[in-house]
Image 1 (cartoon, rainbow, N blue to C red):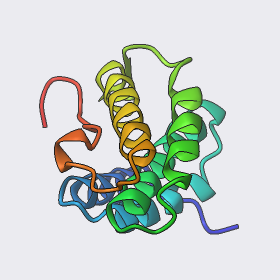
Image 2: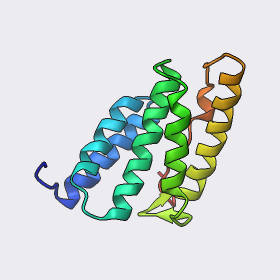
Image 3: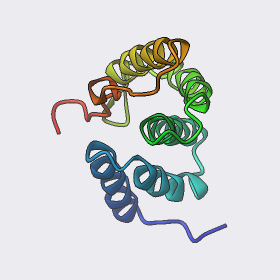
Image 4: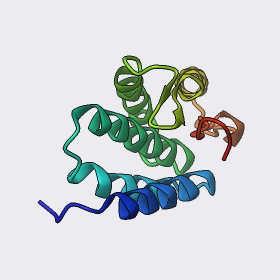
Length: 133
Protein backbone atom coordinates (compact mmCIF):
# COMPACT_ATOMS: atom_id res chain seq x y z
CA UNK A 1 0.00 0.00 0.00
CA UNK A 2 1.26 3.47 -0.82
CA UNK A 3 1.88 6.28 1.64
CA UNK A 4 -1.36 8.21 2.22
CA UNK A 5 -1.54 11.58 0.51
CA UNK A 6 -2.17 14.77 2.46
CA UNK A 7 -5.61 16.38 1.99
CA UNK A 8 -4.01 19.09 -0.16
CA UNK A 9 -2.25 16.51 -2.34
CA UNK A 10 -5.47 14.50 -2.61
CA UNK A 11 -7.37 17.56 -3.86
CA UNK A 12 -4.61 18.33 -6.38
CA UNK A 13 -4.64 14.76 -7.70
CA UNK A 14 -8.44 14.71 -7.83
CA UNK A 15 -8.43 18.00 -9.76
CA UNK A 16 -5.84 16.66 -12.22
CA UNK A 17 -8.09 13.68 -12.82
CA UNK A 18 -11.04 15.98 -13.37
CA UNK A 19 -9.08 18.12 -15.83
CA UNK A 20 -7.88 15.02 -17.72
CA UNK A 21 -11.44 13.66 -17.89
CA UNK A 22 -12.81 16.95 -19.20
CA UNK A 23 -10.01 17.08 -21.79
CA UNK A 24 -11.03 13.65 -23.08
CA UNK A 25 -8.02 11.95 -21.51
CA UNK A 26 -10.10 9.29 -19.84
CA UNK A 27 -7.35 6.74 -19.28
CA UNK A 28 -5.23 9.39 -17.56
CA UNK A 29 -8.19 10.49 -15.40
CA UNK A 30 -8.66 6.87 -14.38
CA UNK A 31 -5.01 6.69 -13.32
CA UNK A 32 -5.20 9.84 -11.16
CA UNK A 33 -8.36 8.67 -9.40
CA UNK A 34 -7.03 5.16 -8.92
CA UNK A 35 -4.02 6.62 -7.12
CA UNK A 36 -6.44 8.21 -4.64
CA UNK A 37 -8.64 5.11 -4.40
CA UNK A 38 -5.69 2.89 -3.45
CA UNK A 39 -5.07 4.62 -0.11
CA UNK A 40 -8.59 5.90 0.64
CA UNK A 41 -9.78 4.67 4.02
CA UNK A 42 -13.37 6.00 3.96
CA UNK A 43 -15.61 3.35 2.37
CA UNK A 44 -18.12 5.81 0.91
CA UNK A 45 -15.36 7.90 -0.65
CA UNK A 46 -13.76 4.70 -2.03
CA UNK A 47 -17.07 3.81 -3.70
CA UNK A 48 -17.38 7.30 -5.17
CA UNK A 49 -13.83 7.15 -6.54
CA UNK A 50 -14.51 3.64 -7.87
CA UNK A 51 -17.51 5.00 -9.76
CA UNK A 52 -15.39 7.77 -11.32
CA UNK A 53 -12.70 5.25 -12.26
CA UNK A 54 -15.28 3.01 -13.91
CA UNK A 55 -16.87 5.90 -15.81
CA UNK A 56 -13.48 7.07 -17.09
CA UNK A 57 -12.55 3.50 -18.07
CA UNK A 58 -15.87 3.04 -19.86
CA UNK A 59 -15.33 6.22 -21.85
CA UNK A 60 -11.84 5.08 -22.81
CA UNK A 61 -13.16 1.68 -23.95
CA UNK A 62 -15.97 3.02 -26.11
CA UNK A 63 -14.19 6.04 -27.55
CA UNK A 64 -11.01 4.12 -28.41
CA UNK A 65 -12.71 0.87 -29.45
CA UNK A 66 -10.92 -1.07 -26.69
CA UNK A 67 -13.53 -3.63 -25.70
CA UNK A 68 -16.51 -1.32 -26.18
CA UNK A 69 -18.98 -3.89 -24.79
CA UNK A 70 -17.10 -3.75 -21.50
CA UNK A 71 -18.12 -0.12 -21.20
CA UNK A 72 -21.70 -1.20 -20.48
CA UNK A 73 -20.67 -3.34 -17.50
CA UNK A 74 -18.46 -0.56 -16.17
CA UNK A 75 -21.26 1.98 -16.40
CA UNK A 76 -23.72 -0.41 -14.74
CA UNK A 77 -21.32 -0.82 -11.83
CA UNK A 78 -20.70 2.93 -11.63
CA UNK A 79 -24.45 3.50 -11.34
CA UNK A 80 -24.56 0.96 -8.48
CA UNK A 81 -21.86 2.94 -6.62
CA UNK A 82 -23.51 6.31 -7.30
CA UNK A 83 -27.13 5.37 -6.53
CA UNK A 84 -26.79 5.41 -2.72
CA UNK A 85 -25.20 8.87 -2.73
CA UNK A 86 -27.28 12.02 -2.48
CA UNK A 87 -27.70 14.64 -5.17
CA UNK A 88 -24.27 15.98 -4.21
CA UNK A 89 -21.34 14.23 -2.62
CA UNK A 90 -18.10 15.77 -1.45
CA UNK A 91 -18.84 18.89 -3.46
CA UNK A 92 -19.67 17.01 -6.68
CA UNK A 93 -22.95 17.02 -8.62
CA UNK A 94 -23.85 13.34 -8.28
CA UNK A 95 -27.47 13.59 -9.49
CA UNK A 96 -26.32 15.11 -12.79
CA UNK A 97 -23.56 12.52 -13.05
CA UNK A 98 -25.99 9.62 -12.46
CA UNK A 99 -28.34 10.99 -15.11
CA UNK A 100 -25.45 11.45 -17.53
CA UNK A 101 -24.16 7.94 -16.94
CA UNK A 102 -27.60 6.44 -17.58
CA UNK A 103 -28.03 8.52 -20.74
CA UNK A 104 -24.58 7.52 -21.97
CA UNK A 105 -25.16 3.85 -21.14
CA UNK A 106 -28.44 3.84 -23.09
CA UNK A 107 -26.75 5.43 -26.10
CA UNK A 108 -23.85 2.96 -26.02
CA UNK A 109 -26.30 0.04 -25.83
CA UNK A 110 -28.20 1.48 -28.81
CA UNK A 111 -25.00 1.92 -30.81
CA UNK A 112 -23.69 -1.55 -30.04
CA UNK A 113 -27.05 -3.08 -30.95
CA UNK A 114 -26.67 -1.39 -34.35
CA UNK A 115 -23.12 -2.72 -34.69
CA UNK A 116 -21.57 0.68 -34.06
CA UNK A 117 -19.29 2.15 -31.42
CA UNK A 118 -18.94 5.77 -32.57
CA UNK A 119 -20.22 7.49 -29.45
CA UNK A 120 -20.82 11.20 -29.88
CA UNK A 121 -18.75 12.93 -27.18
CA UNK A 122 -21.85 14.91 -26.21
CA UNK A 123 -22.93 11.72 -24.40
CA UNK A 124 -19.84 11.64 -22.15
CA UNK A 125 -21.25 12.03 -18.62
CA UNK A 126 -20.42 15.37 -17.00
CA UNK A 127 -18.39 15.24 -13.79
CA UNK A 128 -18.93 18.63 -12.21
CA UNK A 129 -18.48 20.35 -8.91
CA UNK A 130 -21.61 21.62 -7.21
CA UNK A 131 -21.84 25.37 -7.59
CA UNK A 132 -19.54 25.69 -10.59
CA UNK A 133 -16.27 24.50 -12.02
